[in-house]
Image (tube, rainbow, N blue to C red):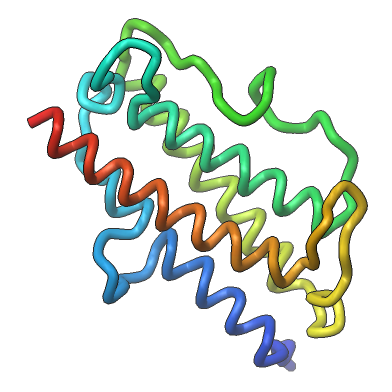
Amino acid sequence: MKTKRIDPEIQLSLDLVNEGYRKKAWHGPNLRGSVRGLTPQEAAWRPAANRHNIWENVVHCAYWKYIVRRRILGEKKGSFPLKGSNWFARPEIASARAWEQDLELLETCHRTMYEAIAGLRATDLLVIPKGSTVSNANIIRGIASHDIYHAGQIQLLKRLMR
């Protein structure tokens, strides 16, 4: 069976998104590592009124992975499983089941985005998709940075909480 050769530029993009989300990195915890082992109550803790908690950061990151996939594939709006956009209020009563479902949503959105990136050709990186002002390459670098940014926020929230 012949395996598909991935363009080096696409492989670099895949490496970037995985470093921000899943793989061990020199910069510290990645997004997935930053939420590992948290209880629903810890994820729902707020540092102050009208401030986002870890749980909301997780769903926010899932949403933007969905947006990246949708943009680079040219898909229509409206298929994210939660109503709304960007920031989503999460359950006031933190249940283990709801927390697990939102962690799974993050994982699914990462996987489907990763698969979309893996299906690109190097020339696709130069394309500016509909609804965007920047190229696919910039969008992909941006989502990797977005994960690292929110991993850092989550680390700070964990320190404030404890």
